[in-house]
Amino acid sequence: MLEGLFQPMHLLVIFFIALLVFGPKKLPELGKGLGEGIRALKEGMKDNPSAQAPTDPAKKTETKV
Image: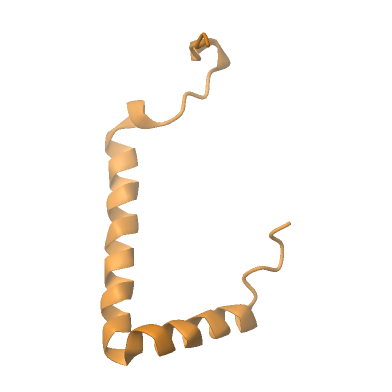
């Protein structure tokens, strides 16, 4: 379904639209903020393993409705 979604031409079009919307001065700040957010998310997932989904099916809890 998502194969071929991020081809080089598609990424160039997305970058060009982002450049038009945010402007050349705001785009680096936006990229820096996005990178810091992704990095913080990865560190948070690494530091708190209990927040991750359990991989052992025996440890799953059932909920009653």
